[in-house]
Amino acid sequence: MDFHKDYDVVVAGAGVAGVAAALAAARRGCSVALIEKQALIGGLATSGLVYVYLPLCDGNGTQVTFGIAEELLRCSLTYGPFDLSERWGGTAGAGFDRFMCHFAPAGLTIAMDGALNEAGVDLWLETLLCAVETSAEKVTAIEVENVSGRGRIGAKCFVDTTGDAGIVRRAGGEFVTSENYKTPWVMENSPDTRQYHLVDSVHIKVFGAWRDEFLAGYPLDGKSVTAFTRDTWQTLRDYYDRSYRDGFSDRHHLFPVHLPAMPQFRKIARIKGRVSLSDDQHGTYAADSIGLYADWRKSGHVWETPYGTLLPQKIRGVLVAGRSMSTEGDAWEVYRVIPAAVMSGEAAGVAAALAAEHKCEPGELNVADVQDALRPNGIKFHLAEVGL
Image (cartoon, rainbow, N blue to C red):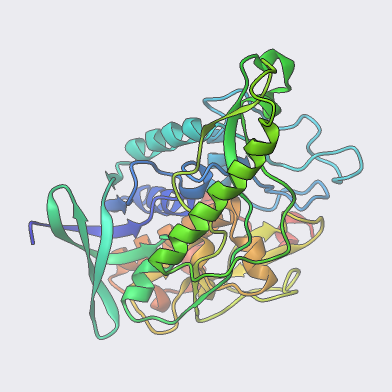
């Protein structure tokens, strides 16, 4: 090995779930490393150009998700022209909007970096997760590679926010993959943005409606990842070929300025956890809930999130947050998005910090202690706490 470092908590994957986990653990006084394979943080929200921060409310005027999820929503507005709707607070579809916003991806990147720096997180960019060391099914270290060479990074506890259950998979844990539908987003601009509403001029455009058909291919196979990405580019070429058929004659024509820097898979791999959320479990009480999240597609469906969804069935010493946590069916659709990832990331970061402090496994923690550590951040765990 060319280098060796040890921390209290290591978070792999600096998407929004990883950022939240790193912030939560560092703010409890832990030494924290955040490992990211790209030169950007934020994952699909930033390098993936998915620039909409979905709702923190139930669609009927009640906020249900708090803590770092709300902090990063407001953080996303720091460097950009967007804002929360002044019509937030009533029933969606009845003249009111939901508690959500658009944001500038680059603005969110640099704002989150400021928060990580203030919290003292040791950020490792352009660093690829290559292998996982285990002892008796416990993760003890990860091997990474960057321009310094191959290195070993150890920790008292790990958080897997890779988006594809990278630590758990490499440690031999059980996981499930999913097919993906094609919803390409691209950033556009216009020679004269005065001719367009702000969100329609300097923005990220999705081409066409959400498609019912799924794309063939395995998201954990290198050739399939390439094929998925190139198929997206073909969709964009087809669109612009139609749009530019007569040439760029209209000076107000929108044109592409940036493409996603990562495959826009909505689902790749998720763990089989000690507990799994499945279809129609919204409104269900979970004694070990670590946060609430509402369905972003419809009003009135709010989920309590069991702590067990963050814990792999067999692999110890690691928690999983974001779109790889243990959800299935329609629940996976609900939880794969930005605010749910942040909510689960914060809980995983706090639990990892507690496990490091108490020198125990995340699965050995008293969930009441995790809840007590989250509560000062404003987290609500049960429907009754928000009047539902």
